[in-house]
Image 1 (cartoon, rainbow, N blue to C red):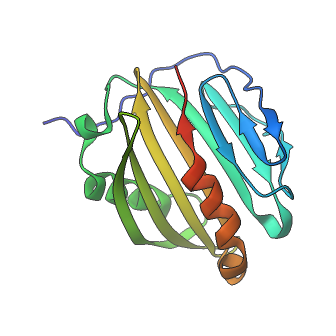
Image 2 (image 1 turned 135 degrees about the vertical axis):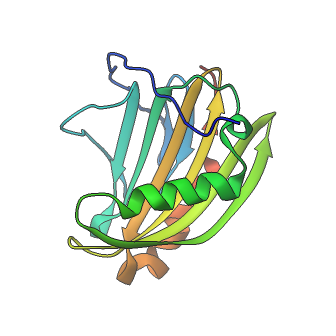
Length: 173
């Protein structure tokens, strides 16, 4: 069984986020809702096929990345525990990271699409963060929504971040 998520090199595209109502963001291939205090932000360096970022108060942010992969489902890569371990292990190796820990992970299915929802924390030289993430693979593309807040702000930020995670849907490819 192969356990490598193969990303194919591609030219990046600009993701256009439109709003259908206050706090509702839609692209050509995904959609999510956030608190109205979040605004679209431009990432200085594009490194994914598609990417979108919205920022809120107190360093809260929600980002979505899309990359081509050689698998058609998340299960081809591994179960939710395996993927959660890979994500947290990758977080530990990030520049400035001192530690990372998994808080929870679960598998969800919505309209025939499997999602893995992860919650984890990291301790970093640049501050301690709490993350919520929702991952899906559809039509050879990996979709990752990551919502984050500082650990000391997480209790207040959780409702807004959870709204983004709960509402995240892959809409087409």
